[in-house]
Length: 90
Image 1 (cartoon, helix red, strand yellow):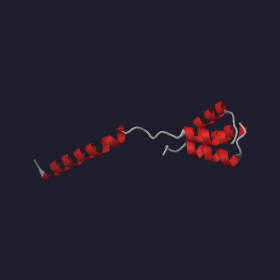
Image 2 (cartoon, helix red, strand yellow; image 1 turned 90 degrees about the horizontal axis):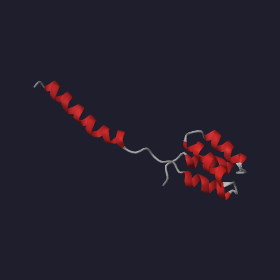
Image 3 (tube, helix red, strand yellow; image 1 turned 30 degrees about the vertical axis):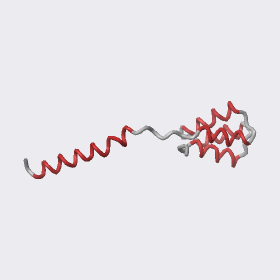
Image 4 (spheres, one colour; image 1 turned 180 degrees about the horizontal axis):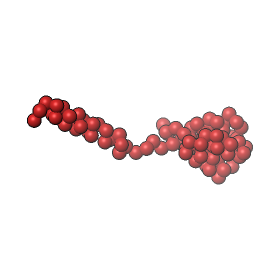
């Protein structure tokens, strides 16, 4: 077996060994409880807050902020809660 074939085989094996766990790893879960808790502390309705926080999880931060402000959460708290929704829990 020529050296170039061996090198290609080794590189392919390393790529599969190191790349497969990254592909199979579960997606990071967003932090909906932190979002709802922060918005709830501002006195908003729980049902509306959960719906808005789900928008933040899906990457619609503006929709999340709009939903929270419509529910009575002040702008700064709504923005912070939606940013929490988009991040993995700690």
